[in-house]
Amino acid sequence: MKIIIDNDKCNNAIECKKCLDYCPVGVFMIYPKGGDKPFDSTPPNMYQVRPFFLRSCVLCMECVNKCPKKAISITHV
Amino acid sequence: MCEFCAKHAEGRKWFLDPNSYIEELMNDKKRRKILEEYAGVGMEYLLRDSTKALQHLDTPVLGKLMDFVISRIHEGSHVGQILSLKDAMKIVDLSEEHVLLPCYCRKMIKGSEELYCINFGPIKEFELKANPFKEIIEVDAYEIKEMLKDFHKKGFVHQVIAAKVPLPVSICNCDRTYCLSMKSRFEQNFKGGLMKGHEIAVVNTKKCNGCDNDPKCISRCQFGAMRMNRDMNYAVIDPNLCFGCGLCTSACEKKAIKLVKRFNNKY
Image 1 (tube, chains in turn green, orange):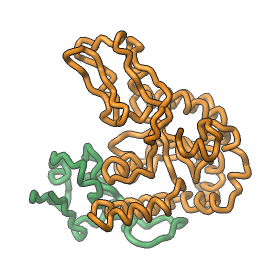
Image 2 (cartoon, helix red, strand yellow):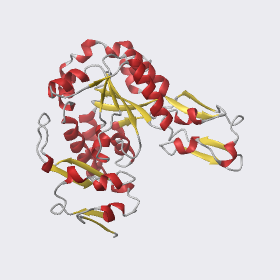
Image 3 (tube, rainbow over the protein chains, first blue to last red):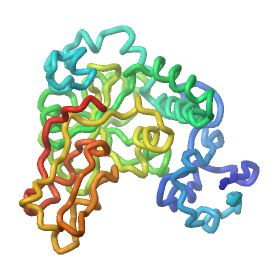
């Protein structure tokens, strides 16, 4: 099983965060993309969502259905 | 005995030893560097990088090597240990300068800033140093104790965090869904991030009556250590899975569950 996020479609992660809100098991993590500057505040367009904790996914499909930009897809392999 | 207690507190609990809170520890160069890295938004970068690194522990051969290397780098620098409510209260009494900060795990996994993180000691100084205009919420010991009781009632697990053992810097109130150190232990198989507590919960089978098959204790366990024996009609706790948070003890109306000292060395 794989969760794929299209980063071109998901371009305003820090403002939206719908997938994080609706995920009941905390699969996704939002984090600053690149750079290593702990004391500067990160600009909002530098955030990214990744499905880090795939092992806990319960396949409820909330994230796929609730994503306003249709950027998330789940493949069953 | 827990390895930290043997090393730093002569067999007492390391976070309850008054010597763990002295200023010499706070002024230690290595610790100051670690705390500087954490302060401000530094924690976000740290959690990002550590989670990324832990992803590779699943690979067959490389994983074992990674585990060794990460454990070496980690070495108790940002370690959490499960606490009972009683011990958490004692830590509040021992520590000074309590401040409330938003929980970083919930910020990154849930996407919301919620004030769950109780910090003390040098944290205030470093947060202000990293961001002088930041509004920091100061709370006194009484308020914190009330908060802890409230969190315990809701079913959150308390965890003491050390900025390089034995200097405790914060008490976390965690939920399995959002806590990154729990996720690193259970989902990414990294043992160093979270340690079991000093106690184990034990059921008194004479007092436990199974609550008419509607037990409140089992749903409160976040570690999956409890189950019902339906033939005998009482609850059982797996001592290998129990982390000693004490959530089940406070849920029991019959007072049939007790926390006892952990004797095996599997932390």
